[in-house]
Image: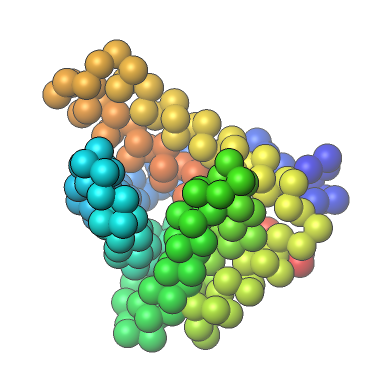
Length: 223
C-alpha cells in the first residue's frame, strides 16, 4: 500500500472520495439496498443474540448463519448498484436479479459467512480475518458476472494475491468508518440515538461499499 501504482493502482484517498461521490450521485438507490440488507441481518441477529443469552449456542449459530446468508443474497443488488456507481454507469438490476445470479450469491455467501462464523470461535478470531481478506470481493465478483459462487470466491482470492496486507488495512479503515457511524449509540440506546445511528450507517456503509467496488475494479484492471 506504499504507492498508487505498486499495490492497487489507486490511492486510499481516491477510494474514499469515490465512495463519497457515489453516495452523492445515487443516495436513494444505495440507501434502499443498504436498508434491505441491514434489516434482513438484524431480523436474525436480534433473536440470535437472545438465544445466546439463554445459553442456546447452536440455535444462536443457526440463526446467525441463516441471517447472514439471506442478507448476503439480499445484498446482491447492493453490490450491483455499487459497481454501476463506481463505473459511472446507469443502474440495471435485470442482469443480477436472476436465479443463476442469486444461486451463485447464495453459494458464495454461505461459504464466506460459514467460514467467518466458525473462524470467530477459534484462535481468537484470527481465521475469520483470513476469510475476510481472502474472500472480501466475492459479492462484487458475482454481481460482475462470475459464473458460479465458487468461481466468485476464487476471483476474490486471485485479486488479492500479493496484496493481503493492504486489503486488511483497507478493511480496517472501512470498519473504523462504520464504527464512527454507530458512535451515537455510545450516548445510550434510545429512539434518538437509534435513529441517528441508522441514518449515519446508511451513509458510512454506502461509502465503504462504493469504495470497495472502486477497489475491485482497480484490481480487475491491474491483476
